[in-house]
Image (tube, rainbow, N blue to C red; front, side, top):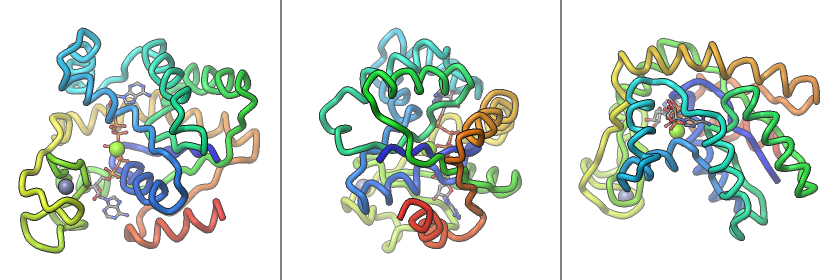
Length: 214
Ligand code: AP5
Ligand code: MG
Ligand code: ZN
């Protein structure tokens, strides 16, 4: 099964992708996580990504398509994958169609998470993650069971993303509306889009997604 999780920054793509990984044996392919790994490695592409991500803008399509093309060829993707953060522009969506066609693969569902703008900003500005295993948390909405200790690995160090400040969030939202939202109608022509109310709590969003993918 190949799924796309689509929606604005902070809508819950990463949170839900992790749950689908566990429940369905699919692999989460988060282009944002891949770019953050490139930034941490200090590579030339990472240096370019750092500037673009901190400005809340999008990386060039050619680079992103190449990253995904190489990634979906890896053996762990053979049972299916969840695209989280890709495609993000119409050229990325058409390039993905070509990549999948060449492998005789087809898209299952495109799941669109709808969340209002005030909630997006609240979610993003309160988000942090475990420095050791990457598990995601929120100051208010998703706290660790034991204060300051990661549920998944017991780690006690946490980090916040450099682009998770209110100013950058505004430009990320601008990029979503200007360049990404238009791919929803692109997929609607194929009748594979499922819109989910992403304002529900995390567990109920998961239940709604499960209802769509079966
Ligand atoms: P990326 O990392 O993809 O960021 P994003 O799209 O802005 O999305 P986020 O990761 O911020 O949000 P999310 O939807 O995953 O929400 P989460 O589950 O964490 O991309 C970063 C940058 O990389 C881009 O700006 C761009 O520069 C570049 N980039 C990446 N891909 C690219 C591409 N294809 N082309 C070009 N450039 C690209 O949830 C957020 C918080 O809310 C968490 O704290 C969570 O605990 C909480 N939460 C989640 N669900 C709920 C809920 N239902 N109720 C309450 N709280 C909730
Ligand atoms: Mg994410
Ligand atoms: Zn951890």
